[in-house]
Length: 145
Image (cartoon, rainbow, N blue to C red; front, side):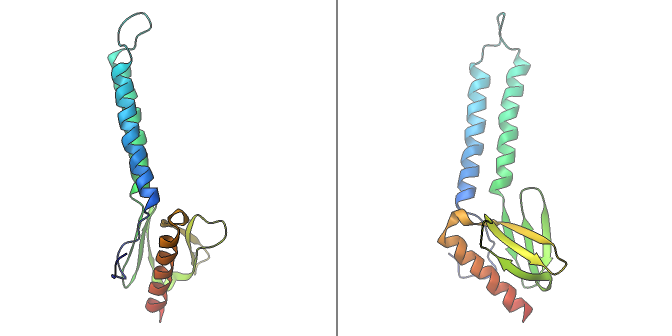
C-alpha cells in the first residue's frame, strides 16, 4: 500500500483474473484456429480460422477493459474509469461513499441524486478494499472541509 493519498485506486484480484482470461482467450482461440483443419469436405476455410482467432482477440479486448478499471483522485475530484464509461466527479458533488450491503464495489451517492459505481474498489479484494474505501472517504472529507 502506498503513502500517497492521491495514488490511483485499482482492483487487485479482478485485474489479475481479467488479464488471465485475456491471455487464455487469445491462446485458446489461436490454438483452435491453427488446429482446426482448413481443407477437406468438412474443413474450414482460412478465413474461418482468422475469424475464430478474431473472436479470441475480441474476448481479450473486453477483459482488458475490466483490467483497466481505475479511479484517480486529485485535490479537486475523482476520475472514475469503469468498464464502459469514464466520469469525472468533483468532491463537492459527492454526498456519501457507500461500501456495504450487497454492493460488489464502492458506490458514490451524488448530490444530484445519481449514484456512481467505483468499480476500482471491489469487495473481492477483502481488507485491501476496505482500506481503499476508507482512503476514499478521507479524501472526500478533506476536500469538503
